Length: 145
Ligand code: HEM
Image 1 (cartoon, protein in one colour):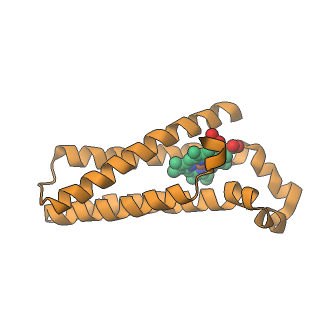
Image 2 (image 1 turned 180 degrees about the horizontal axis):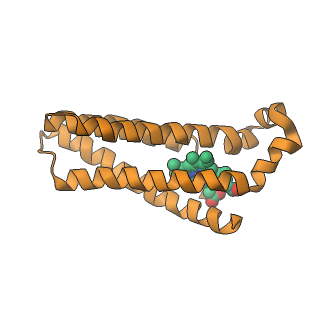
């Protein structure tokens, strides 16, 4: 169960990063070039939303079945916070990424309420880019690549 989830979470991360990058760049270009917000733009933004939500669900289950979770009882709260790697896996990566999903969801729902194409692109572009940057800042790169 743990190994399967870890593998899925690890590979799914590539899709999440790629789709979010594509959606953010597409929206910023759309805004800069004064394009019309069409079906393609809607779809790519929706894929970003769905892919990242799926990763959130996998991550939430993985959190409790991962051997990292046992470090809470082994080290205690202060022990976890003192060790940078344990803190990254148990605190920073999960909390930052939950915030990231929140930002992406906000960008998605705000774009729907906008009346002009430029504003739709801007909401997706800003919120997805910020989410992506935060996400990249808290990936356990050493273990992943
Ligand atoms: C939504 C965006 C997320 C992305 C792109 C992402 C990406 C990653 C990546 C690349 C790794 C390293 C995988 C490896 O070692 O091969 C990882 C590990 C991990 N992630 Fe996430 N993650 C996300 C969200 C979450 C969330 C929300 C949680 C928990 C609430 C979570 C929990 C974990 C845990 C516990 C590990 C360590 C698994 C282990 O090695 O035992 N992730 N994540």
